[in-house]
Image (cartoon, rainbow, N blue to C red; front, top):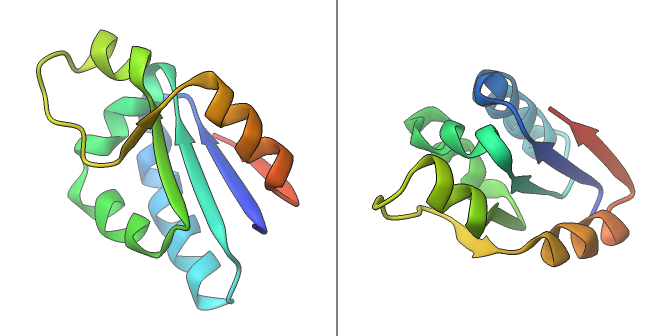
Length: 96
């Protein structure tokens, strides 16, 4: 994979959506890992639409349950071990 977007802040969704669309336009493969308050961005429809082009979109299960308890998760859930694996696979990591 070319890029891993590591999403940790609540305002990252407004940055990630256009970055994901740009990656798709230029043919770059990408994945996203959402952790801590970054999971809040997954409530944004624009971001969810942009993530359709991602190889993987994974949320830290612990963070999801902490910040959005009781809500259905729209992407794959995983652990920080998945985060580490994605970082190892990525040619570049962009932290938001």
